[in-house]
Every structure is written in structure tokens, then in C-alpha cells.
Length: 109
Image (cartoon, rainbow, N blue to C red):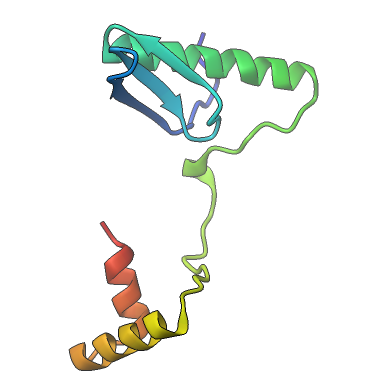
């Protein structure tokens, strides 16, 4: 059973502890589904999320918004120790870029 407009963030990974694939959903971190193949793990987690969303709708609970449809400003604050701040400011100055650009490049993957 698929959720209408299912835009949740799913991931399938190998679980060495369980010797099976595990399906996960970022918006529902307490849910998982074990299966012998990645395809079955994905299908299983999507089905369990659909069941949970249906139950939440029936109980008039707040349903998590999919990460993919949220709007992000591109800004967030990170606190670091003063010596780390200084070291980063020096690296940025030596590279001829702003501290913001240096931090952004280090956070990018």
C-alpha cells in the first residue's frame, strides 16, 4: 500500500548484525524493515510508513512533513570553541575567502 504523494526520504543499507538489508525512513526514525533483498527492504519500509501515516490520519495526529518538500533558508548557526573559530578565520584569510565560504566548503560533500 503506497502513500499518496509519498515524498519521504528512504534509505536501504546492509545490516551485518541482522545479516539482512534494512529499510529506513528519515522522517520516521523509529521505523525499520528487514528483508533478504534491498528491493524487499524498500517495499517493506514504504508499506509500514503508509500504515503509520494512515493510523496517524485516523487519530488526527500531526504527520511529519517530507524533508524533500520543506523549504530551507540556507542558514544555520554552529557554535564552535573560540580557538577553532580563530583557526578557521586564519585559514579563510590565508585562502582569500570568507569564513562563511570556508565553512560551507568544509560542510559540503
